[in-house]
Length: 91
Image (cartoon, rainbow, N blue to C red; front, side):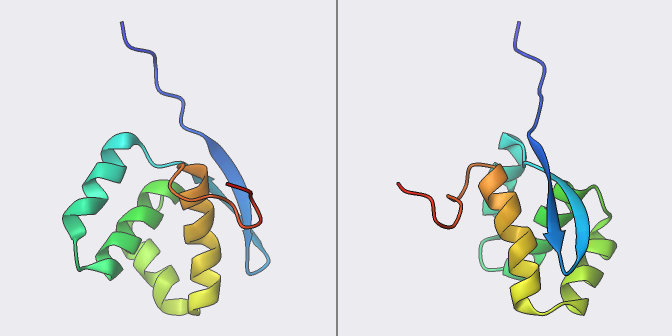
């Protein structure tokens, strides 16, 4: 029997607001590859899955914030999902 999934979760401060996130599942990470050169769509997918928001809400977030603010949230998801090391971490 395979173990029951328990994806990591965390809270990240984004522009003064606490945002709950969860790591991406293995299947979600694999699905990201299908976006190839469609980075905007990939980011919408990542944010909607990791925050539990709709894709429209994720797109509105990206359209309403500057790149640095969006990067804070995206990087937190990547680190939590094991796709990137935290800033200041030693390899």
